[in-house]
Image 1 (spheres, chains in turn green, yellow):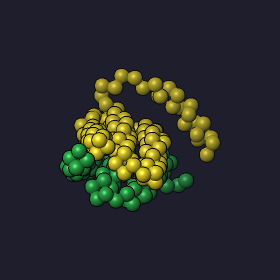
Image 2: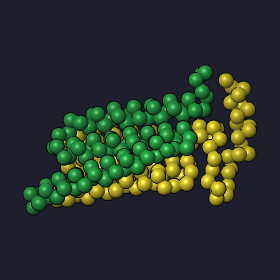
Image 3: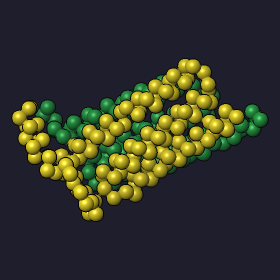
Image 4: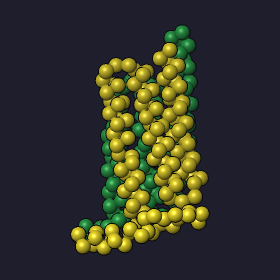
Length: 95
Length: 118
């Protein structure tokens, strides 16, 4: 029972990594062709979220939970960059 | 049993994240895209982190997964709101089928106040 569950989990982890890679590619399309600057910032923010999820799936795939700290830090950096870009769009470089 | 539950959560989470990315490509203007990206990615990463917590099942991993989820649930709406406000201020075009813009009549008052403040 446990053996079957584990092999299923390995397959599902690989499928999830593939789906998340496809999602990353879609976000990259929007990042490349987005008509305005907020579109590109939003695509970068979504890419940050996707990579946080990827780190979680990778932890399961390699049976090592140490990488979750990197996910937390990456989420923090993605949020800070979004806030900084929003301030830059709204007020410019002067303030 | 926990393996099957974790696999189900993993698949659900990556499916919703893929849906967010698909919406970001397909939807017509910036505000609808922002809506799709924020909601679906929050739900997706939440499901993935729940799967990680269930799979490992130890206290420190669960704490980290819950911390990541709570942090994302707090910051994603704030970032989306800031970005939407900046885009509205910048004058990003709406979709041509948008019917209502309730912010327009408050916007001049707000921008005058903001100009006086700074």
